[in-house]
Image 1: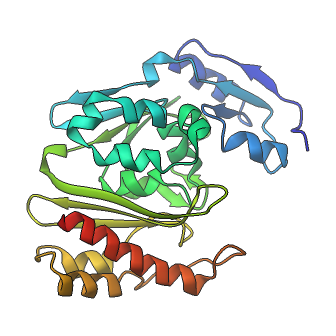
Image 2: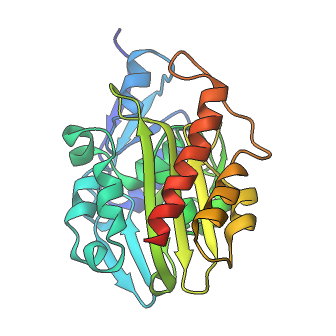
Length: 279
């Protein structure tokens, strides 16, 4: 199927993009396009205009900012994997990005696009949530900074106004991360997560765990976190935490995996993530 007719705009700056979005309330932002274009072809999305921000260099790149690492929203997965800053400060992200889709997706798909699309089976929303990231946006009302814990509202629903653009993802206090991982059971055709679990352990022993794919929206595994934080990551403690990974969650089921199977996989991959954190 073909998408409906739409206008096409290529702004010269972020402020131009915001202006175009304000003037075209039914428009969509085009970055990587791997999520947007398929739903347009199915006519699940019918924007009147596309605002193409792919060539806005100000939105790309990875840099250090004090104790934080800042990722531009237009940074692709391949660019993230090649970044010297990421290799030095957050090397687990190289492996995590390598699990996204295929080579074509990694070469074109963007980190900001994944956060904006808010797909319930996407990888990087879970990862930035586990990293306690801050997501910066710009709109007609100015700049705003959202905690990742507040940004992912619901399935395909970020805390993003129609005239707002994500500009960067800020990962704070990276020096305090003792270990981090992303463990994933991928759909063999699409590469999306049937279940994915991200884990971060701080130097103080606190553990953050998040899940994607098995629930309607990426979320913290608070019961498992409470069971393991501050404790030794030994076999008994890891098992006790993994057994609690599904508490309080509503699991989704479809033709690819039932809700019971996803609940089981959530416990399995929580255990694997904790074992990885333990080294």
